[in-house]
Length: 422
Ligand code: UD1
Image (cartoon, rainbow, N blue to C red; front, side, top):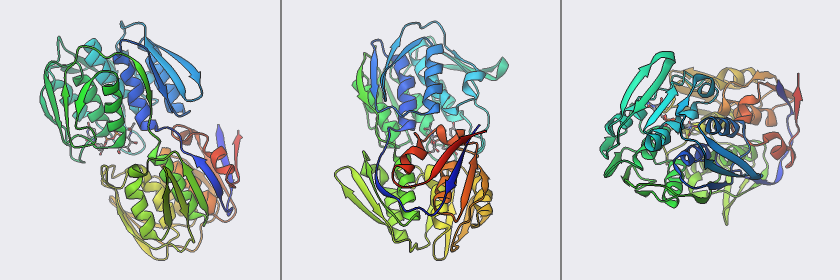
């Protein structure tokens, strides 16, 4: 199993190219199930989660060809299987994204209920409520599978808000199912995340009739078919935000290429409040820092608020601020597995329910730590970059799920991260 050994204390300097968005690519790849002609997708990141999605799609009758790095061709060749089993789904929660396309196109989706995960219980009640509102029969059947069937789907007005606000994959799933539903579907309290907007833009490019994407009210007029074509996935705002913190925390200057600066507003605002310089230059972002970090308060919120997927990375940053910060997690209240690991490296973090009080310390110290989930692992890499001495991060397969060759990208700008195997 791979692990990282990071020699801390190196200054970073140079340019990093941001990869395509994982969370946009996964549902867009799933949406190719709905297309009657071949689809070519560009800017697909090279990640293990993407490989899982390829495997799932192949099992569901899609022929996938890798044309060149970052570009894949998808063609549906067999529509007879609509079952994504537990073996497939348990490896990646985002495999639930195939439900909407299967139900919409094949009028049948059988998908294993995703279990809990390391960032807490993650229900799919909103997805299922949406499918039912479109006229599907939804049953939990033997083997822990959810079975959704319909003779036909009909447009409906659907309120998609939940206890924690809107849901990204529920919006994606119900929007996809509604593409072929007869008449008009209105999704209220839809997720506004750029990844949902990108999915809608992809569907429109293939022939769907969708308006309002990027806002909490999405309107879908049913169409008979989606064709094929080419589409380029948006850049990954979470990868960009992670490297912004890498520059800020190491007292360095980095240029990030291929960003959508509009998607980085919440992270940029916090960094500026912390005292980091963020400059925009033609789609690139330049971050420089003198590492005199001011403490701040952060609350995670649905987009355009501060993303939960950057909460852990910013906690590492604020560990080194000149005073006390407060981080409140409003999306996944249990998403704090990094707290204990960062404390092992000398951070002073106190968790009280969904809030963490971050007492700034002068330095972090290298230690062996355990990656627990994707973003928590990124937070540990950032801590390792700045810590005194050597940090060993175990279970880096979590990082490989969502960051394309993170050690190569950081080493190219001056970090010292070794990937080893034992
Ligand atoms: C997506 C992202 C993930 C990100 C999260 C929040 C993908 C593949 N993953 O996850 O990286 O951290 O958005 O921005 O895009 N909820 C319900 N019922 C549901 C669905 C969700 O109560 O049916 C709750 C969740 O438990 C959570 C909140 O709603 O508290 C938001 O979750 P959601 O937006 O659905 O997250 P994901 O789409 O799973």
